[in-house]
Amino acid sequence: MKRLLEICRNKYFIATAAFVVWMLFFDKNDMLSQYEFRTEVNKLQEEKDFYTEETAKVKKDLNELNTNLKTAEKFAREKYYMKKPNEDVFVIIKEAPKD
Image (cartoon, rainbow, N blue to C red; front, side):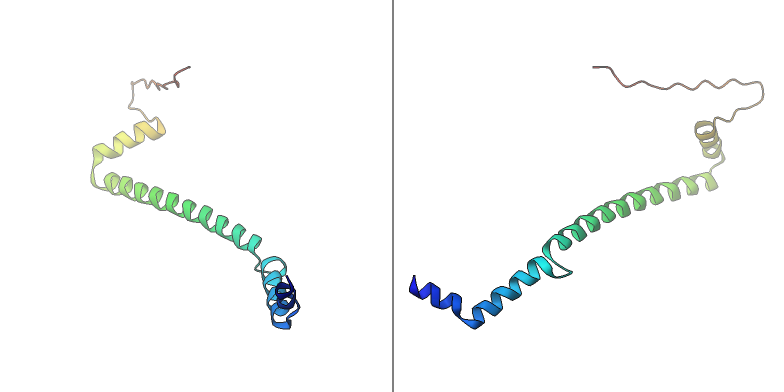
């Protein structure tokens, strides 16, 4: 017990303990801030991945539309509900199964 008390009174121990407490709780880059920054970075990375995938899909669709006329017609009919003269378009929406 006496040995522990001597260590706690040592000026180097006190300075080190004060430094650690300062860095963990009071500094602008404390542990809580670091945790919040990491969660924000993870969220932004997920958004980046999502938008990268969406961009790839749109580029693929654009390439198909530019190269194939039948694909352009199909795209116009499905996305914008366009139709030929004297033609009716019926939109069928599937409902989610009820439990």
